[in-house]
Structures are given as structure tokens and as C-alpha cells.
Length: 414
Image: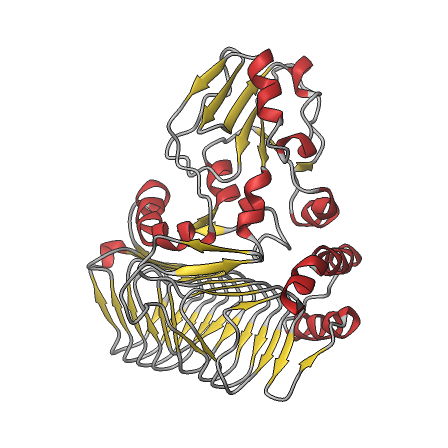
């Protein structure tokens, strides 16, 4: 059987805090995650995954694929960078070679005898590429490798269109449609089974396709303007405006105005408030009236603070990046280009800091001490509300992230 291995490289650090709790290839852009999109292009192929060691057991729980261990076969293996937006598959068969762009490994096609020398840790080491250049034929390639979370936001609309054209192809309406629902260009609208669309809703696919999964409830008088993706078991509250580029993960509850924002699975933004040009992790709860700015008053490019450095993103529109398990109080207001870490609790009436380190608890009166036991208890309670239980591996990863983010917190405290 042919074999591929999807790996993450050292650039995963650019995707923190979103990548603390998952490999970069589990991030979504368009209709699919990077992992799902690559797997779709390799049917009847053995799939292997490489990730950071502390994520190994948690990733193994989520997937049936071999993790951090290439299964023995006689055909060799094609290693594919998990940050790759791949429009067409790279051939598994062919001569041994390393595909490189800008000193980054895009892919490596190897015989089985050479696969064993490749480990997850080596792909995380930028110096590893110099070793490969000495041993294997190198081919310079042009590829689309995302480098930062705002790359995902920037290309999200076009990727929804591309995924729909490549993998969905045509619209299909399987939802229960109540009287008074209006659909514009229904050939570009796909709805899954047991989905219900209540009276007064408008689904407008004139400027891009709309994909709605199974068991979705779209409440009355909501407007959806494509390109949009809505995952399985999502609830869209009444009077919602789900606009171009909205990308809602499964089992989420959303409302208010959402535009060009990716929300991972199991998160809540149920109430009024604007959320634009942002990327939100899983198990996030945004309190009523939480809003973000996505455009500076000078109309210049947005600058963000990534830990100890400031980066000009080159983007005119950029809202916020928020890690998993973070919560906000009602009427929280985030400035343009805010970075909010993993497992934060923000309870402020004034504007929060533009950079919020992971495990922070901010209130108007004081900043509380970091307490991983307390944060774990909050995370468990939220998961239980969705009939999910944090596994032992999930708890270990949570604690590992707390240890990994110590330097981040110390930098901010100083």
C-alpha cells in the first residue's frame, strides 16, 4: 500500500496560541482542515502523522492513523508539510527527492530504508534541511505554505469557494425548509440531513457557495451570505448575520454578526456583537456583546505582538487570534490585532491588553495568579455541558501547555 506522512515543522510556533492544543495541520481554512484536505487527495493510501511529542497520545485518540511512527511497508513514504495548501496531489511514486521552497521542506519522497531516519523531532529542527541537501536530490518547487494565523483568515473566503468546487461540486438541499425561507442561487447551496431552516431566513450564494452540515438549526430571520461554511450540529440564533468568510466549526452556537472569521469546534458566540477577520479556538465562550475591531483608524496595516516581538502582518483587516478554552465577560471589547492566549478568562469593562498571555485571569480590580488546577476545572465543566469528558491525555496536554507558557507569562509580568 502507498504511504504518506503529514508532518509539522518548526513554523508551528508562529501559530501559537492556536497550535498549543493541536498540530498545525488540524487548523481549518475553507471547508476542511489541512489534514482532511490532504487525506481527501490520497484515497487508498496509508496515512501517518508526525506531531510534537507532548501531543502524541491526544492526536492518537482523535485519529485512526499511525502517529509518530511510520508503519513498515515496501513502497517507501511521501512526507508532506502539514502547512501546505495543495491544489493537486504530489505523486507518491517516483524517484527519491526533497521538494524545497525558500529553505523549507514542502515534501520528501523516500524509500523505506531512508524513512526510518526521519523522526518528528527532525522536522521541527530547521537545521535538518541542511542534512537532507547533502544526502538527497533537491528540487526547488513553488507551493502555498501558510506562515501565520492571519494567512488562514486572509485566504479563507477563496478556500471555501475552492473546496466547494473541488469536492462538493453542486448544491444539494436536504434540510427541512420552512415557508418564508429565501434561497438565492441554490445551485451553490449545500445543506445536510436533519438540518432545519426556520421562517424568514435568507441564504444568499450569489457571491460564493454556502455549505451547511448535518443537524444544523438556523433560527428565524437569520441571513447567511456566502462564501460560508457551517459544520455539523451548529445552532445559529435568531436574527444572526453570518457573512462572507464565516467558518463555523461543529457543535458551536453562534449569533450576532460574524464575517470572515474561523471558529474551531465546540465554541460559543451566541449573542449580539461583531466578530470579524478573526480566528477563534475550540471551547471558547464569548460573553454577550463581546466585539472586536478589525480595522485601524489610520487604515494602515495591522501590527500584532507575538510574545516578545511585534510583527507587521501586512493585513488591512485583522481582528483577533484567540486560543482554546478562553472565556470573555459581557461587553468585552478587543482592539485590532489582539492576541489572546490559551485558557484565559477576561472580565474587564475596559479594553483588555493587546497581547494576553495564556492562563491569564484579568479583571478590573486585579490580575489573578495563574492556577492550572482552577483552569482545568473550568475546562472540564464546559466540556461536560456538551457531553464530552476530558480524557487523561487531554489533561496531560493541558498541564503541558501550562508549563510551556511559563516564559510567555514571565515576559508579560516583567
